[in-house]
Length: 191
Image (cartoon, rainbow, N blue to C red; front, side, top):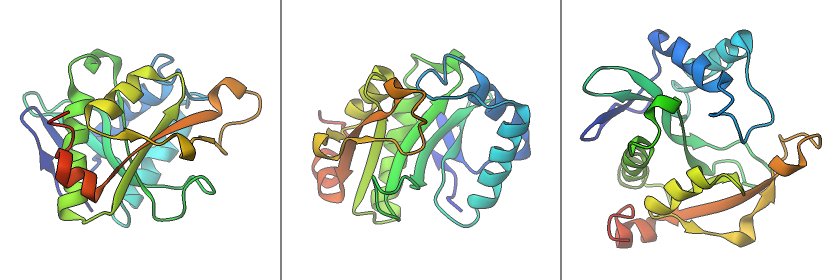
């Protein structure tokens, strides 16, 4: 389990039962889920939440993102050992985020993601961290660029979990950062 990671305004921490409602909120919100082929109803969201609770004790998975000042959970941000084969081999670690809309535009995803990158490279010693999004998801790709990830067009892929009924959501662009890039850029703070 990843220990809590603190930034100036945020805490990346393990999921707790009190986060269940906000987890449902982000997974059912049409704006948040604009680039996903489905939204989750309460039963589906609760089932996925239970999976994360178990998973966080066994593997790397997205962390709850809490606002330090109020203790409010804003959604999630952090690292996840991927399950998007054949696009990425087993063991590939991705960085991602999903926040409630009221937290958008305040730099929380960027701040949390920089902390997650630091944890991944400094504490876990990861050789590479990737991120991917639907090609038109400019909000997410902008965060990827702000945290210092580089576009890797040769690894772009059609997401195997997106059904053919949603062809506009299949193509995903890939960004990445290596441990060497991290040492050079220190998480995008210079670029």
